[in-house]
Image (tube, rainbow, N blue to C red; front, top):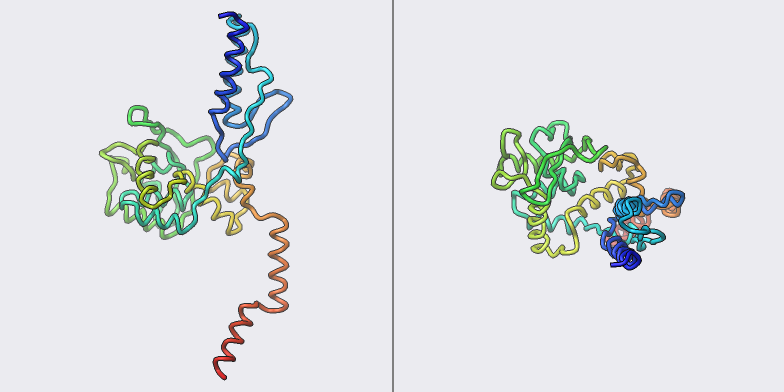
Length: 294
């Protein structure tokens, strides 16, 4: 094949490759025009491919870089790409989940753990008296052959402050389901830790039974984050709970969930009017009581 034709073929492949490697809602869409380098997951993949092509040009394997002047496909905004289950949907999932899987869903939905972090939990990571959960390792791998235990993502080591009912759920799991090995792993099947495919299979069974086909296990982490934001937690608090290395990652992922200035103004004005004029619901209740007494 002539070099020109080969370069054209490579150029088509780069476009298709970049389009297929889609980005999740948790990544930023920022770019650096001065360097031509992208900061998204899809962009990072493109950067690696571009480096390989440039090296091929230097080595005279191809005559030109087919990744030059290629614009990556537009990515969906976080608000459009993210799916978050409702409290009733999470409750349904927990109700249909087998007993040995409920605590796993619990640490994802009520402590915001990533799949690998949940799979890496040991009994010693849970302080039942102080109601804390320490994230210090993760299980990586897609299947049994390549499963390994490693440190969490950079900056993800953390202590999560968990509700009493979650500690009770974990304690019930330890008592009724048991733990595995000398390290007392919380989640395993036949002595094997839950890698991505295994945990994903269990979740798909729950998802099918509960009619939640559109949700992934990672959406339970979004559920946890959205709840923190809804109750007024600031960016740094959410960042630390989720184990994001930087607050900017939290903002890039969840900024659309925080109330806007307009929302805050409206809420403050509503509270002011209720203070001055009283709560309309209280007035209606008072009126109903007066009518009932007549």
